[in-house]
Structures are given as C-alpha cells and as structure tokens.
Length: 445
Ligand code: S3P
Image 1 (tube, rainbow, N blue to C red):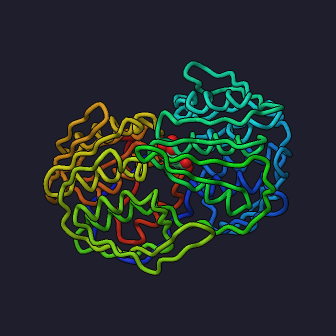
Image 2 (cartoon, helix red, strand yellow):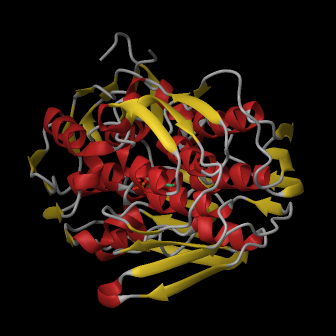
C-alpha cells in the first residue's frame, strides 16, 4: 500500500508526453505475436497491464523482448502457431488483456488457465465466454464466467455473427481476434460504435476487414479469417485516457497552461475533449497527423472557468474510462453536470460510479448517484476536499482524486497509489514536474 496526499497546487506549466496508449499497446503485442516475422513497437506502454500481456504471449511461445525504453521487439509465431502454456497465465488487473487473449485462444486448439488480481477476478467474463463458445471453444469458469477459468480453443472453429449486448470494444475485439484463425467471415455487430483500434491494427498487419452500417446507427464489422499477417513497425501514440488527468488538472488549477504531445485522437476516444469543450474549456489541437493508422495531435490546454453540462448516454463509449476525471472537472465547475448511460462503470476495475459518488461526497461535493447516472453539483471553484479515498485497486479512481486535491481547500488523500502503475507509470513525478504538490500521506487513508 502506498498512501499519497495531494494538496492545493500552484499553476501547472510545461510540455509533457504521457505514456503510450494502453489499448493500442496490448493490441500491438497480441497481433504482432500472431504475425509472421518481426514487429517493432515504439512507445509501448510499460505499465503492469501491458506487461501481463507480454508475459502471457511469451508463455504461449512468442518472442517478446524489450530492446530499450519503450521499444519492444515481437517475434510472431504466425496464426495458429501458439503453444500450450505450462503454467497459469496471470492477467493482473487488466480486463483488456484477459478478454482479448481469450479471443485469440478461442480458435487455437490448446488449453490455457487464466487468473488475475482481486479486481479482475470479480469482473464478468461471461460477456466473452458466450460468443467464444459459439466458435466451438470450451470455457470452464466460476459463476458469471469469472476467473480463474480454463479455456480450450476450438480445433475446427466455426465463424459466427454476433450482436453485442453491451457497447464493449473488448467484446468486439475478442470476437474479431477469434475470427482471425477461423475459416470464413466473422462479424461483430455493435449498436453503438466503440474504439476501433483492433480493426485499424489488423488492417495495418494485412488483414481484410469490412464495416457496414446497419439500422439505427449500428455497425457490422467483418473480418475474413486466416489472413497472412506480416510483422510491422508500430508507433504507439500517447494515451488520451492518461492525458485526461493532466488535462483536467490544467483546467481546474487557475493560471495553468500545458501542452500534451503526441496524444492519440481516435474519434472513438475523444468524448472527454468534446465534453470539456462543451463546458467551456480551452483545448487547442495542434500538429494533427496520422501515425500507423491512428490520428494524433498535440493538445494545448489553458485554465478557465468550466460550466456544468448534460452528458448524453450516446457519448459513453467514446469516454468510458474518463468519467472519474470528468466528475472531478464537474466538481470544480459552475453549475450542475449530469452524466447518463454509466451502467458499464459498475463493472470496471472497481464500481466507478459508486466510487466517484462516495469519494466526491467525502470531499464535500454534493452528488447524486443514480442506477446508471451521476449528478455533480459544481462548487464553482475549489472543492472543500479533506477526504480520505479508498481506491479499491482502481488506478483511475486514484489519479482522479489526486487531481481533485490540486483544486481543493483541504488536501485529498488516497489509501493506495500502487494501482497507478497499471496504466500510468511515473504519474506522480510527471504531475509534480508540472508544479503539482503530491506527496506521501502520513498514514493510510
Ligand atoms: C478497452 C475498452 C474499454 C475500456 C478499457 C480498454 C479496450 O472497455 O474501458 O479500459 O482496450 O478495448 P469496454 O470495451 O469493455 O468498455
């Protein structure tokens, strides 16, 4: 346990680059391992979640090695070339690592045992178990498909068409990855478009993907099985979900101005930037470009008054990981912010809806927690603060409340900063380098 305390901050200033995108990092390792030849990845996120994917792929026979800071080399085994691991695969805290790997394994005829930390073991895997069993995979899991579980991939997988019951890029990706080593065409239909990093990266490696619009905004994504995937060069953009923390910090600490370099701006991920703009934030996009199939830009952010807004449910997939930090922006804004369509937040690393409502209330902010909504009554400036937050193995809850402390009358403390390593190694040093005041708390919160 690493308790930390965040106190009122001077204006933050400077130019930084946050670590590589977590979603793209997982996918570059996974797809690189299934390609023929070498994949070189620059800017890989070296956080614990991604290191779990790397270790699992090594156990499955791929060559995955760190060459230098953020530069990794993957020697792919080719589709169908994975070998049975002799031990249990520990996916740590990472739902993405677990669900995407299960997708890959579903069409490889071998048996693997998967587990994770206390947070991951309480998260639902039935959402991938159901479609993967349709390919012919066998999965034995705890109630609700929970881990630990065993998966035996299909020897002769059948292609499927699967309509996603929840808006989840993880489920879509598991289906598409299972479809890779399956003859014929596999289709995932999503009623709301979710992040499309898997689709972009598969194309980058040479796979054939087609998308078709369906009624009421639904999207059908089809992959043609057994493509020839060839090793590639990948540059991972900075993670917009990590950039979100210094971004909001710069907005809520008066006098701040920062630049965030090389941030991934995939339109299916930019819901927070749109919402903050609706609230009146000054966020400028500079040097917009595209790298390895993903849009990227530098973001210049200046502090300024924020006003509460209504955030529609339709925006949730494009900012699903950003609600904790949006709730912090809302707490400092003038007026009320209402966020709709948040049911999925209850099955993230923690129940983030409950965690934000509880934590903000502890810090003197007036909040209402609905079944799938959150209402935050903004303080119109500094929040009272003074709360002690239980982070419950959730990196984003930890970082969100450290940012709140920067704009609060009284310091905010968190009981454990260790989970931050899963997605944003070096977070505290980076924030303090900009001028934040985050340091050890005397006692556990
Ligand atoms: C992710 C998808 C999202 C997100 C997670 C990463 C991905 O989950 O919350 O942090 O890389 O595909 P869902 O797709 O399950 O909402």
